[in-house]
Image (cartoon, rainbow, N blue to C red; front, side, top):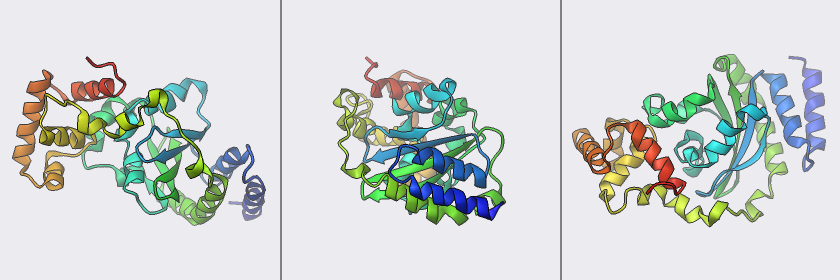
Length: 260
């Protein structure tokens, strides 16, 4: 890496803090460090729909990465879940934050796999107790190498500091959601199947959809893994479905208000 050019780009980025061109300049700096396919910056505030603060997706990718994502799948996104915990500021691989069965789960199969990504990593940047932005770097061809991750880790303090300065006003911005349904989104897991499923069955559904195995759910809820499987069978019977794929589809439809 040409260090002089890196410092030149870093200086230009600092001068653009607060300007419209800052996100693009930040992406340019990151690509100078490590090549990758797409950049997206989402703002997460409590359980409200994510704000697309910046992205460089081509038009053909906007629907899958942004439009579809904010309609509900984001609730099962490991980055969204981590932002709500929250995790410490820094750079993370998605696979390190994902549940144990994430790549076998229905969120991955029915949504994430359609993105065609080989890997996604993200800088977590804390703006306020309830507000985090995640700057995601996405690769379509191959995963980031250990050496590339080290290179990005080295500039992480600079990336986080400049991003905090640029988007620092986000926690004070008024955010409205489509149809005023922030409360509905926040309570989506708790209300899914209400009147049909028991509270425990709804908990099992939530953790199943997030990509947790029966063994992981048993530890989270403090019940036997066999009991988890019984709850799953009961859920399928009550909802008249036969697969996790149908469960995922039903959840997304309920969230968007299209379920009967």
